Image (cartoon, rainbow, N blue to C red):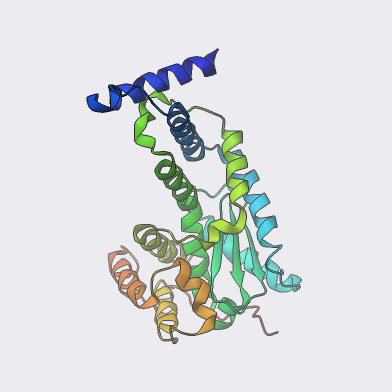
Length: 283
């Protein structure tokens, strides 16, 4: 009964929102209207997903991703990455997530933030790092995406656009369950990593990265140095293909990170630690 009543209300609101000229027409595509309402409901489910379902979906997505990228078989390295990553993550606004960090085999220079607390970094990125502070900056950037739920917001936005959400968003009050949203997120799988976030999200994550690194005791200036080194690589380098498919040019990010360093209070570039990598990838 509840579902039927919701559909009737959705139709009524959608019909009232139509221009008078359209209302006068004798043929109305009810299926399109109902599909739009379903799309709005699904987008709201994604936006209001419980933390437990976000974590469960993240585990599934991480497993799918590891089906495409082989995990590095180096227990010492993996323990080291988890030690650094967890310490940085504990400085964030979501320290209680089950944070996990892992290196995967790939010459591509990139890292991936999985909803729910998993961060994957490629061996190509590890080879480019000069010290542990730069590793903290890379992890901090990805942690920022997870804390701010950037990928969930992207999926929600896509659903709203695809469904023509303006038709009946006012009649959906959290329709559907968080569990359904979790299943939808899982269905997107590792494809979410091939989607580019908006410029503002990347800017926020860069700012978060240096802030979390500074809170963890690292030199925030290391974030700027790493980005400058990245910007110095040739843009047609194959190792940068996946990075620039989903991120702004490093040369643009250098300016953003420089301004973020200047905004930090109580810390400045050159302060904090910049220790050597305790364990490096040498294969």
